[in-house]
Length: 580
Image (tube, rainbow, N blue to C red; front, side):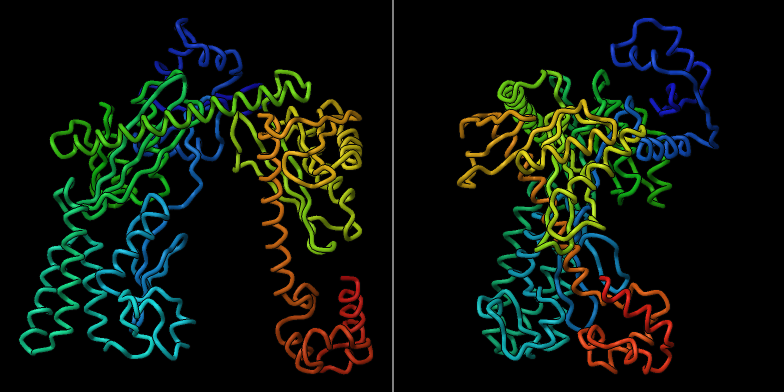
């Protein structure tokens, strides 16, 4: 369903499209949200698919890509972390996030980084595998502290044979696969063998490993009892806020949980939220063999879609018994607790936002706030950053950075003006959402510069507030410039706390972008950006003049003497190097 400007309002699917679409316009008992949507619908576009599973995939791809305002939407851009066992003669344990290399083995996914690190510590204690990077491993001359505290067998200096280390790696893999009983039997066999050969110190090490593994296995398997991969999903709703809790069990081990708060979930039943979560969440992520859900839902199309995506059978279980019921109760408790925390946070943020409106004397309609900061090192690699606060939370998916070019180094006013012109020029052209209030990290001068930039973009009606650090540059002593008016709020003012939070986030984001840009510039040869100078010519130039500094000091005549460098190219190189 599309609006007057061809914006997508809603994406849906149905076996009987005529019946489904007409139901929107024939029924009169719609909730406020759907009623509002129907007043905005100007036309409907239809796509035919070959099956329900294809329709489900298309629906959720469109929801992810177009983010319609009336669809339930789960924003989860973070990738899940994995535990990695690398390849090679002496593999290492490591934390991994991102693309995968076939040379290594990966276990997971884990719900959060803490669960991965906890597993690494556990495997270090039991199997004593190395965790150091290859660059460290290959250059050590003596064992590190981990060897001294019995968390590593020091393969870097030959304290363990490759065959014995491989046994430990195999044991760790068995444990991560959920086959802890097999790993335990292997350790018991090695202990018995060492004892019979009178290698009692070695046997004692195996004994300690067995004890640790038994303790961990008892703790991990107490509630699961089976070596399986399961996701348990529960939903909690209260005060128009919805929370979906995902609890992950891999190899029979409970790895932890993660809570999600969808957008546009008001007026939807929990089974609709649950179906939307399953369809959207697993579209780009690994799918377990079994998904346990608390609500009765039409699982046929979802199972078909997930099975096709995973290329194996996937079951969605809604009628739980015994063990699965216990898991579900834990997930439900987690969902309720996360929802309680979110509501408490929203209450606090609501109070802060109300105090900010009162303290600055701005309208009660102010909801969306954007904040700008500029970061550089003596004018080098200038970056301007914009962060967004909306619906009482920071909206990280809407943050933007702007690399500043063509401005005098160190000219913060010029950098700020360029960033504002680039951002609000697009908004004035109909791209994006205009804020209700703009914060500028700076004083009266920065506010005046920002006002000029907004006026040029045709958005002079947006209110500006400058946040100056004050005479002593201490938190709590900020001076606020609302136009020509100077405002100082008490250090304990709730509105000031919100201002500080938004300002500090803008500063963090700007500094991170500046450091990344500066680091890239300092590690990248300026010759790489010159057209006509490829890898071979760069090497000839650097070799001839002893490095980039020598090339910078060379004249046009000196450059032209290098093989393959014509006079015209030498002039071009000289001009571009010295212009930079």
